[in-house]
Image (cartoon, rainbow, N blue to C red; front, side, top):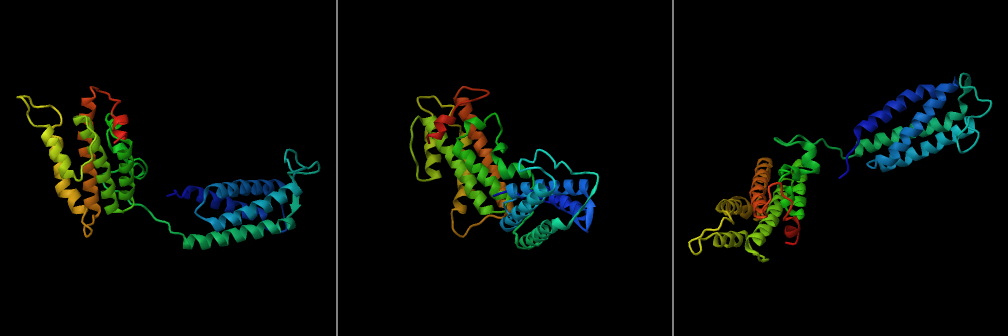
Length: 295
């Protein structure tokens, strides 16, 4: 997904509209013509580099740049280096504008091609999602996980959360739910491995919950601090009310459902990551990332 730079299009249109009167008619001031051409050349070159959403217009812009460069070289500069003006050039004088016919033709062609592509372009406005900063949701939704525990969350899980946020912003609600749950499952696996010291894959979240509850049972009169009963309960709640229904082919999420699931996913990941941080014996934390990535 590429961002459409609307402001740059506006600035190009402004340069275009300001330049046209200076290039029209039979005669014009040399100073005005020169700076109008240079301004157009600069703006069109920027358009060809950055506005990839308009491939046909980009080709037209390249043709316009070539026409402008040709006129500048022939009428203003001594050679192709464009380091010195022609010796007899009087910037304060007037010049005949007949040689600008090709430039005006290319500019008009550019305007028509851009108009056609704009009409056919699939351009959308993304509405604000309640409770979220839109740019963050689109590009870095993992920042919703507090920075003090983010290093404890596996990289793969952070990637899934970023995808979940992007899908939520773009109204792909069911996809957002899937990515949220995938990210949470990665953290659950890392959590189990850290608590048990074993690397084991389970077929379902139910099995993860059962394994964590077994590890939390009192042994020889001592109840372990980890895994916490709170974490197991939160995972089980997500499993029963969110994950299992969403796995059914006929179940989909609307905006409210995806929004709630994303927030619950962040909350649950936060609880797991806090335990991972504490188990690592850190307050400002650094660890677990390497261990979790291997899961």
